[in-house]
Image (tube, rainbow, N blue to C red; front, side):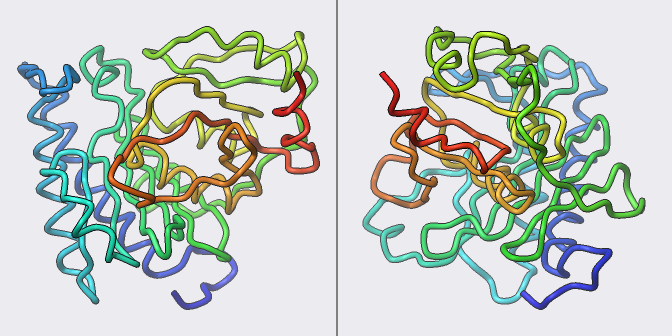
Length: 273
């Protein structure tokens, strides 16, 4: 990835952003129709929009050079015996937040990440309804394009707010109040939001923290992790270690916290009894 000019993201990030926008168009075609909902084997919902976005993204990534393997939520999971040899690959969630899509509240995203040596080194997150596109590449910063063909804006996290603003899951609530107090004290404000938009809210300096106690998959976090890291934040497991990918047979993540202000000793706060 070559160093970009000072006012636009890297070329590869923009290319992948264009693929995400094409997938977003396919999603909106279904979103504005009378779509049906299926149930997958794990009881999660599936719509024609998930599959349409999957097709667009797979075709777009296949056209990039060099061609790399793709791991996607909506494709058959490849065995660890094959994945263990991957050093560089695409990690994709064609429609993150299908439950929000079904509710038609607009809080769903397209997530595309490039993984290199277990790290997310390029991330693209598109919110199809608002048109907001977040892109980032390692050492090249994080960027927001508010609408297609619009200007690029460099984004950054902010110092911890007073009171802190905590982004929370719209459809996956949980008992986490005690740990939130441990991390930011009792005087925080909670903002519910769907999909990987919670990470992006922190990356753009509009929230401070997102704590997730419960199951997520690698494709749920990888793209937004790169955006948040390049904006000045981090995604940490509850031992304070940065997230890594393609770690083993399971594609489930550990529980985590996403934070914006790295001047705070989050490891100490995580370890406080």
